[in-house]
Length: 148
Image (cartoon, rainbow, N blue to C red; front, side, top):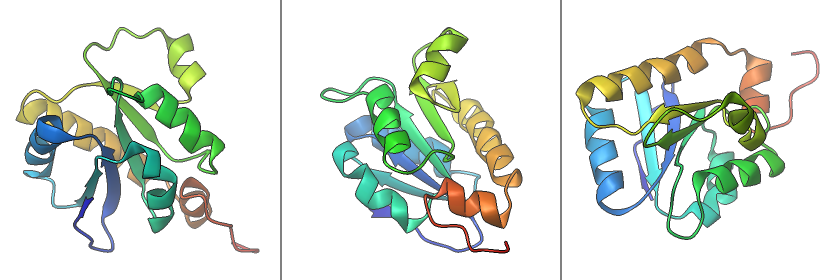
């Protein structure tokens, strides 16, 4: 797992591997200093990683042994019902009912160029702007303090 931590930034966890992960990191990191990107190629360890406090999760729709849809279900059932989940896919023509079925926040076209990376960064920023202390803690699967 690679990690670049800096408080005050929107924390993003990307689950991928190999050349796809490297290309994603290169495209996404350029020009987005307000986003703190952590990557992992260990999708089955995700419930151990998420409690570190992430604001958004990005998954690939298709992985060799477990796909993003299954990972999203594991995350939702594992105590992260409000964490924004973005599933990257090759085409965005997924029917709305399928999006709701997998409990993803949004499906997004795979990054192909700096422009698509910036569009994804804007989507993530919009998730980050729509937060409060209570929703931040809920999103991250942490108990909400009383009176907050």
